[in-house]
Image (cartoon, one colour):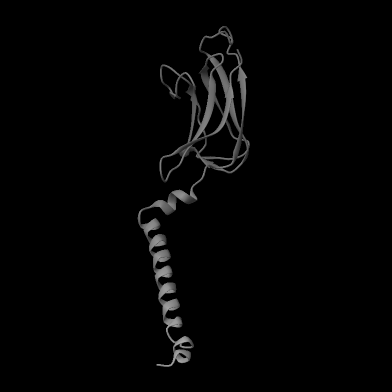
Length: 153
């Protein structure tokens, strides 16, 4: 047996590297396909929209901001992305929006698509109540607060 010939033999190096590369490609491909099959790919791409809202609080008359319900807030989309009204909800810290309901914030009629300059009015704001604009992800149901303000005392 010739040791010089054994040490210079390099025919097996190329097949070993080829097998390692094929295994790595298979693992990566399986991970990518598995992510989309399980539906995780859709949730990764959906992030909260970038939009700016302003809040204009006003007294409705006799109640004033004295702790009683009845004060108003005008929520205005100041800029940023155009939003679908079906994904937007406005809630107060004391109660959620009750359009036409007996308690909580009332009113609020957004157009189908909310763009810069659109606004709506809500009634039934209590003094010191925090009003939040909440976006709900249509793909996964997760929610994000994209704006908030507190009514004056």
